[in-house]
Amino acid sequence: MHENQIMRYMMSKHYKENEYVCWDFVIDVIKDMYGIELPEYPVTEVQAEFKNRLCANFKHSVIPDGEQQEGDIIGFSLFANQHAGVIINKDYFIHLRPEGVVVTAISDLRKNYVIYRLER
Image 1: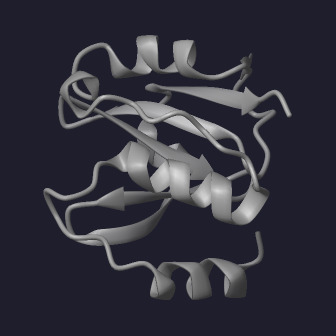
Image 2: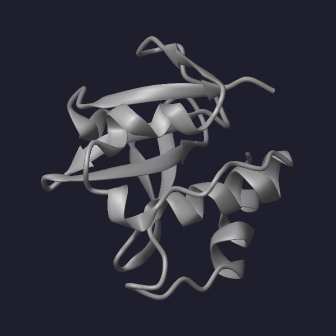
């Protein structure tokens, strides 16, 4: 995903706080950018064991740190809550925060994450 694609994608989405969760955003990105349909994840379960149970919802491989690539899904803890995003290149991922869609450096997560590669 090139920077201009990311910017166009971010500008095209209008997520409202408390109406969408991070997984809704991941579903949209993976479908819109890669044509892959992911299963929905019950909102009631998003905070409970998200990182550990998320992978039960789709066929995947766990990817070692440093081997991530565009389109991989990253699951991590964010202020004691579980969260997810989509890798856009080796160093950055895109995700939905309460203030909107943001791009964050993977290095900002301090190794507190798991990277999943979808089996296509």
